[in-house]
Amino acid sequence: MLAQIEKRNLVCAPASWSDVATFLLANFATHAVTIKSISGETTLLFAISAILALLFPYTGIWGGWEGIASAAIFGEDVLQKALRARALCAVGRLEDWATTIENTSEQTHHQGPRLQSDGTTIEHRRKVEVVSSFYYPVAREVDQIHGQVILPPGYRLYKLLPGVKVKLTRGISNPKWSSSLDLSSSRNIAKLLIGIIQLLFACVTLYRARGSQLEKYGYAAFGLTVIPYAAMTLVNLLAGFVTPEFTHLFVVRSKYLEEAKGKGGFFDGTFGEPDEDQEEYQTRIDETSHVHSLSVSAIGRFKYRRLTRVEYLCQCLASGLVVVAFVVPYLITLGLTEFKPQESTLAQRAWTMSWLVVDQFMGVTTWAISIILAIFYARGHDAMIPRIVYTVAWAVFCGSIPAVIGGYVTIAKMMQEFGNCINT
Image (cartoon, rainbow, N blue to C red):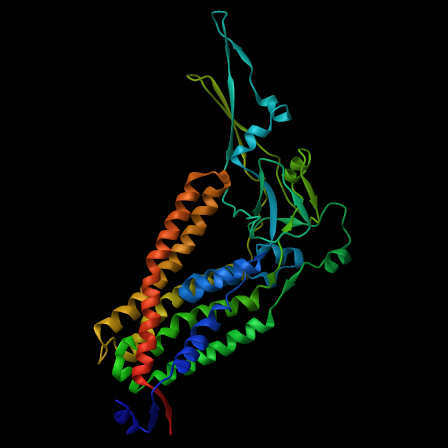
């Protein structure tokens, strides 16, 4: 094989383990550290996300998708930028909030005894239900929150959606004060520069794969395995330009925050307040069980603004880039190899392609899990569905690891077999 390559003006030498390690470090590991940080994310959580992106690069694409769709740099002021970057959160209720309202004003919704036509009375029992909302919950264990927050039982924090109307706290009307408001954020220039370098290096790797490597291994060539990592880096790089990274989450002063303060909560360092409508209670009486049900919202009735044209365009761009990122490995492989196996073995083709398919499956799975948890986590920490979701996610992760290990081992063996080649 080496003799045949030398005839094509290439000089090849057997690849050492240091050559293999350099290839893996430059083409895989450094790509993983360029993922977009989530607002308020701790160093530990970022490290876990980076490791997951190292194993399954498509799991690291969603932070970039959200960053591009948010288009935070187009916010009118730093408060609006923080809102679009999902760095603002508000106090909300948990399902067990109903057990904490004894002897409070909510008791006024209890109907009491009801007089029947025959002169007898029926005591209506009250049941309070908290209606869940589609808001991402804040995990106090892994999210960094600005200031001091002490929540009473029955309450938790939720990230505000980018479309919620938010304004400065009552009493602040001077525009100069608005412009001077500063929330901790960063462009992370070093990460952006690394991302640019990594994209260029990935292009060089693909270029070097042309010719002898593709002629020998076909669509199983180890140079093609960098495409998913390059796609992830591109999406996160663009996100880094349009959305800054906020190191902490900031609590806004909502009506539920004031309610929580009245029950022993403490909040220091709040910024702004959402525009809210008056809370509405939905009541119904079950004549069979004589239960008077009162439904309340898990989070305030916020007013929403209309998205700008730029935001719509960024959302379309983000979704389009994700679709392209999932398709581009197959398109590039088709264009360079026409999916011809050449001299590659069945095992080499099986490991490299299974790694790609499993990687994309894990990417979709992590997105689905985040949506499911956002829907059901509002019911509280003891909800059964989040526990089942975490169990299934862990099982899927463990079942996917063999494809990753097999992919890395196959790449290392192919590199040692092919050698380290340079043009002369």
